[in-house]
Image (cartoon, rainbow, N blue to C red; front, top):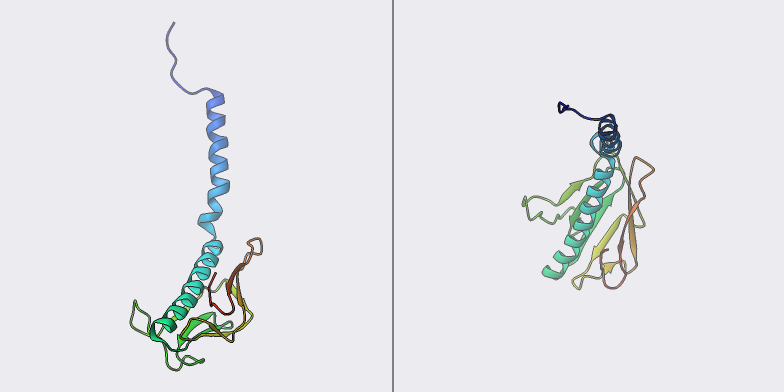
Amino acid sequence: MRQLKGFTVVELVAVIVITGLIAAIAAPRFIGRDAFDARGAYGTLMSALRYAQKTAIAQRTTVFANVNIATRTICLGYTNNCSAPVLDPATRAAYVKVLPNNVTVAASTAVIGFDGLGSPLPNATATFQIQNAVTLEPARTITVEAETGYVR
Protein backbone atom coordinates (compact mmCIF):
# COMPACT_ATOMS: atom_id res chain seq x y z
CA MET A 1 0.00 0.00 0.00
CA ARG A 2 1.17 3.44 -0.86
CA GLN A 3 2.05 5.93 1.95
CA LEU A 4 -0.27 8.95 1.99
CA LYS A 5 1.23 12.26 2.99
CA GLY A 6 -0.74 15.00 4.69
CA PHE A 7 -2.45 16.02 7.90
CA THR A 8 -5.43 14.41 9.54
CA VAL A 9 -8.55 16.38 10.35
CA VAL A 10 -7.80 16.05 14.07
CA GLU A 11 -4.37 17.64 13.60
CA LEU A 12 -5.80 20.50 11.55
CA VAL A 13 -8.54 21.20 14.12
CA ALA A 14 -6.00 21.11 16.96
CA VAL A 15 -3.78 23.65 15.18
CA ILE A 16 -6.75 25.94 14.53
CA VAL A 17 -7.88 25.75 18.18
CA ILE A 18 -4.37 26.48 19.50
CA THR A 19 -3.95 29.37 17.06
CA GLY A 20 -7.31 30.79 18.15
CA LEU A 21 -6.38 30.60 21.83
CA ILE A 22 -3.04 32.31 21.25
CA ALA A 23 -4.72 35.03 19.18
CA ALA A 24 -7.36 35.63 21.87
CA ILE A 25 -4.71 36.02 24.57
CA ALA A 26 -1.98 37.83 22.65
CA ALA A 27 -4.02 40.17 20.42
CA PRO A 28 -5.16 42.52 23.21
CA ARG A 29 -1.53 42.98 24.24
CA PHE A 30 -0.66 44.27 20.80
CA ILE A 31 -3.78 46.37 20.29
CA GLY A 32 -4.00 48.22 23.63
CA ARG A 33 -1.12 49.64 25.61
CA ASP A 34 -3.15 50.66 28.64
CA ALA A 35 -1.74 48.00 30.95
CA PHE A 36 1.80 48.77 29.84
CA ASP A 37 1.28 52.52 30.28
CA ALA A 38 -0.08 52.04 33.80
CA ARG A 39 2.87 49.83 34.76
CA GLY A 40 5.29 52.33 33.23
CA ALA A 41 3.69 55.25 35.07
CA TYR A 42 3.86 53.27 38.32
CA GLY A 43 7.58 52.66 37.80
CA THR A 44 8.24 56.28 36.80
CA LEU A 45 6.51 57.70 39.87
CA MET A 46 8.12 55.18 42.21
CA SER A 47 11.61 55.85 40.85
CA ALA A 48 11.06 59.63 41.08
CA LEU A 49 10.02 59.37 44.73
CA ARG A 50 12.96 57.12 45.55
CA TYR A 51 15.36 59.43 43.72
CA ALA A 52 13.99 62.41 45.66
CA GLN A 53 14.61 60.60 48.94
CA LYS A 54 18.10 59.43 47.97
CA THR A 55 19.06 62.90 46.73
CA ALA A 56 17.86 64.46 50.00
CA ILE A 57 19.98 62.03 52.00
CA ALA A 58 23.05 62.37 49.78
CA GLN A 59 22.98 66.18 49.77
CA ARG A 60 21.69 66.53 53.36
CA THR A 61 18.99 68.92 52.26
CA THR A 62 15.24 68.94 51.66
CA VAL A 63 13.99 67.71 48.29
CA PHE A 64 10.35 67.94 47.20
CA ALA A 65 8.44 65.76 44.75
CA ASN A 66 5.56 67.65 43.17
CA VAL A 67 2.92 65.46 41.50
CA ASN A 68 0.64 67.60 39.33
CA ILE A 69 -2.47 65.48 38.89
CA ALA A 70 -4.05 67.73 36.25
CA THR A 71 -1.08 67.63 33.88
CA ARG A 72 0.19 64.20 35.02
CA THR A 73 3.71 65.52 35.58
CA ILE A 74 6.23 64.80 38.31
CA CYS A 75 8.97 67.29 39.12
CA LEU A 76 11.65 67.23 41.77
CA GLY A 77 12.97 70.40 43.31
CA TYR A 78 14.59 72.00 46.31
CA THR A 79 11.43 74.09 46.75
CA ASN A 80 7.87 72.77 46.90
CA ASN A 81 6.96 74.35 43.54
CA CYS A 82 10.10 73.08 41.74
CA SER A 83 11.40 76.60 41.06
CA ALA A 84 14.85 75.31 42.07
CA PRO A 85 14.83 71.98 40.23
CA VAL A 86 16.80 68.86 40.99
CA LEU A 87 18.79 67.76 37.95
CA ASP A 88 17.98 64.51 36.19
CA PRO A 89 21.14 62.38 36.32
CA ALA A 90 20.57 61.11 32.77
CA THR A 91 19.96 64.42 31.00
CA ARG A 92 21.44 66.98 33.43
CA ALA A 93 18.23 69.00 32.90
CA ALA A 94 15.42 69.63 35.38
CA TYR A 95 13.93 66.38 36.67
CA VAL A 96 10.45 66.43 35.13
CA LYS A 97 8.61 63.29 34.03
CA VAL A 98 5.31 63.21 32.12
CA LEU A 99 2.93 60.28 32.54
CA PRO A 100 0.90 58.92 29.58
CA ASN A 101 -2.47 60.49 28.73
CA ASN A 102 -4.50 57.37 29.50
CA VAL A 103 -3.24 57.15 33.09
CA THR A 104 -4.94 58.76 36.08
CA VAL A 105 -3.21 59.54 39.36
CA ALA A 106 -4.92 59.98 42.72
CA ALA A 107 -2.79 61.20 45.60
CA SER A 108 -3.26 61.82 49.31
CA THR A 109 -0.88 64.78 48.91
CA ALA A 110 0.30 66.52 45.74
CA VAL A 111 3.64 67.61 47.23
CA ILE A 112 5.83 65.45 49.42
CA GLY A 113 9.24 66.41 50.68
CA PHE A 114 12.13 64.45 52.12
CA ASP A 115 14.50 65.91 54.69
CA GLY A 116 18.22 65.19 54.98
CA LEU A 117 17.50 61.98 56.90
CA GLY A 118 15.08 60.70 54.25
CA SER A 119 11.97 61.24 56.36
CA PRO A 120 8.90 62.54 54.53
CA LEU A 121 7.60 66.06 55.04
CA PRO A 122 4.95 66.27 56.39
CA ASN A 123 5.71 63.28 58.57
CA ALA A 124 2.70 61.22 57.53
CA THR A 125 2.06 58.28 55.26
CA ALA A 126 1.40 59.37 51.68
CA THR A 127 -0.26 57.24 49.02
CA PHE A 128 -0.44 57.52 45.25
CA GLN A 129 -2.81 55.42 43.13
CA ILE A 130 -2.20 54.94 39.43
CA GLN A 131 -4.85 53.51 37.16
CA ASN A 132 -5.24 53.21 33.41
CA ALA A 133 -8.29 54.12 31.35
CA VAL A 134 -9.44 50.49 31.23
CA THR A 135 -11.37 49.91 34.45
CA LEU A 136 -10.74 46.17 34.43
CA GLU A 137 -7.15 46.75 35.51
CA PRO A 138 -6.76 47.26 39.29
CA ALA A 139 -5.13 50.44 40.54
CA ARG A 140 -1.47 50.27 41.53
CA THR A 141 -0.65 51.91 44.85
CA ILE A 142 2.61 53.53 45.95
CA THR A 143 3.01 54.22 49.66
CA VAL A 144 5.57 56.50 51.28
CA GLU A 145 5.86 55.42 54.90
CA ALA A 146 5.85 57.99 57.69
CA GLU A 147 9.07 58.52 59.66
CA THR A 148 11.29 56.35 57.43
CA GLY A 149 10.22 57.61 54.01
CA TYR A 150 10.35 54.08 52.64
CA VAL A 151 8.75 54.03 49.18
CA ARG A 152 6.89 50.83 48.35
